[in-house]
Length: 412
Image (tube, rainbow, N blue to C red; front, side):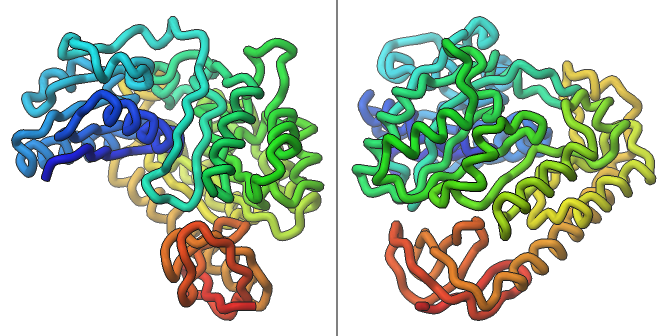
């Protein structure tokens, strides 16, 4: 089967960049290629990517196989050693049109730590998805002890507001009714720009200058870095969706300190309380790591208890995965069976929290963005099943019931 296939692992930023690459690959005239946009957050993500690469070579023996993304950026030689791969591209190189059309070496991976700016990349389609992602920030200047991503993404750098507004206008003009702002460390937006505008300033400008944009959503935020202007918008701006995903990682202060996070347990609880006070009904999600090195049973219990105390609606749980070159990989490790067990407990707590959150919304109305006929997501990003609908439509539905995983709605 000829054509360009892109296999994306990991975050929403990768999803956005996959569409940038799709445009470059098509413009370069690639006709039979499989492009893997990898993730390096966990060893499991890398294992899945390698497995998919080998399967692709078996299924499409004549295709050109190109591998890029964070895992390829961090360890390009390991991927170059795989006989299935024709080209390894770095995270900076993958976004340059010339990387896709010019003759080059089999490995084209530069020093990401030397990259100081990020350009606006316009994507004119999202493979028929209902919502569009828009990159506004790249890289990370923090050094959490468990995280290898700064070495795959480089230093923090922001897209100037004017370019963000221009891209958002173009996407709205193409009919996208919801845009998701993405970044590696989204809440650090603007620190490298003249005047150091914060994320809240960008969001206010975007909403004011793109009146046709009906829904704006934010990807993951550091709870220690939500600025005052953004809090005001959460309270006042209905087009900013009532849905925050927080990069929390742990509910124990000593573990947070060993992770080199910038917030405490109390900070998380305060951020969640403030969000609910400012925007009643807001949905709160969180990233949590299970089994961080030195995590005792009592420390883990603090994280487990945080789910209920903070009123979290849904969880994204990561079993701790030691990444080579990070301080956490050199700390005393917990047995893998224990890490998996704790992750399982957290996921079970997340399932209970989600079921409770969905049940509490039954009887209300929702504005649901249709992703495919019969399925979409409401303002709070909760999944909703219903009859009919066309992708991209926003339907007003009465929420009539709930299962543990989704809501059910009908025309209000």
